Every structure is written in structure tokens, then in C-alpha cells.
Length: 350
Picture (cartoon, helix red, strand yellow):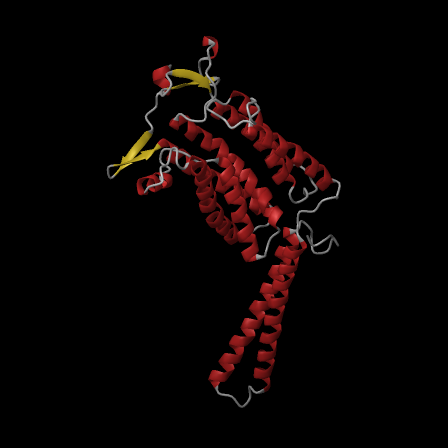
């Protein structure tokens, strides 16, 4: 059994350079997560171009912040203040990514993308993204298995010294709780619940419902697994109370309160300034349409005395006005759908 679990970290080589199982698993998780996001975005009428831009924003920022959150607390210990130490900070082939940092980076990516486009409600997009993130976490935990990391305290009961309860760690020569498997399984349950919440109800959920569920679920799972986590965790003073565990349970409690307030209409995550920006964008588009119409109208009045080139120019301006009009209508429809309301239902804009 120990030999079975001692899997080579290198999956294959390309031009003599090793490609690690950790990277293969993480890449596979990212691809599947993006595919799930595309499905969820399609249901919420989020266009494909915007989804591609979300991918370009979220993935790099998530990876960067994953690494930052892992490296910063270890500077001066695992990573010396030198050029070689800096290069080690950039090397993620051996693992070293903190999911909390990924959540922060991904949230910034969603925010910046929505801010730049001003098409879709921020929390409406976030509800799709968090489920994709959850799927990525589930798959990514098997990268921890290949890297022999994210394991718990030692398992001394021989009856439990096998998967899925425990995993043999070569560096310690002992069996430890398979925390990666526990977390992946619990997150799979959470994803199933989130998908049911997303697809089953006939009435659309309020924007932010699934995002809050994700934060609460992650806080509960992570906080609970801290009971069996090994290593030297940061505690409050000389007590055995872990700082991370307390923070996770606080996040869980806060999300429950926010969820209740949201469902009873006492809380709205959609900021007015974001709605105002979207309205300003529509106003700018409308102004461009009116300007194009005036240009076309003036061109039609003088068309008789003009050359063929002038006629072609006026027709081009007329086509431009028509395109801008279609763009205006498209923006209005997108904006209305992103808020979860149809154009005629009389609901709030955001």
C-alpha cells in the first residue's frame, strides 16, 4: 500500500524539462472550472466574449494571489531575502498555493472585469464564478495528493491506515489523515447543493445568494478540518485555539446573518455607484446614436448636389447610426437581464 501511494511527482517530460502531476491536475481543474462557468453564464444570459474576458482577468490574478498569500508569511524562513530566494518564490512547480489568496485574487478579477465592461451585475457574475472555483478546488486537491501535502495529524490506528481515511507521507514515514480528500469530498457536496440552488428554483435567486453560500460553506469546511490539521498553526497566545479556525467560523457565522438579511430584503449587494456607471454608459451610447442621426440627417438634406462619394459617405453614416441604435438596445437588454429582471416586470434595476 505504501508503494502504491508513492507516486512519482513527474508526469512526463517535454524537451527534457519535467512536467509535474501537480501542474497537470491544476490545469485540468482550471479547464473544467471554466467549462462549468460557461454553462452557468449561458443560463444567466452572460455573453461568451465577456466570459472569456472574465477568464483572462480571474485566472492570472487568482494564481498570483495564491502564491503571494503562501510566500509572504514565509519570507525570511523558507524563502531567504536574496535573488535565489526571489526565484524560489516564483517557482510553483513544487506547490505552494493558498486558496484564500486565490479567492481574493479571483474576486478582484471579477470586480475589475465588471467595472471595465459595465454590462452585468457584479454579484450576478460572482454567483457563477464561485461555483466554478469550487469545482477547481475539488480537482485541485488531488494535486496536493501528488505533492504529498495538505495532510493531517498522524493516524496510529492501523485499521484506518489506508485511503480514503489516511495517506502515507514519505517525508515523515508515517500515515496521516487525508485532509485533501476530506476537503475535496465536502466541497463536492457543497457544489452539488449550489447547483441545485442554481437550477431547480423556478424563481431566480437573489444576486449574491450563492456567493454567500460558498463563503459560508468554505468557512465551515476549512474550520472543521483544522481539528485534524498537522504542522505548527498560529494560535491565540499559549492556548490551543487556532487563529485560522476562529476566522473560518466567524466567516461562517457572518455569512449566515448576511444570507438571512439578503433573503428578507434587508440587504442589497448591488451598489448604486455601479448602477449609475451603467446608466452613464447607456447615456453615452444614446448620445452617440443621436449624433450619428444628426450627421445622417444633414447629409440627406444636401445629398442631391453631392457626388457619388458623398452619397456613399452618407449611407455609411446612416449604417453607423443603425449599428449604434442596435448597440443601445443590446446594452439595455443585457443590463436588465444582469439584474435578474425582465424589461417589463417593473423590478428594481439592480
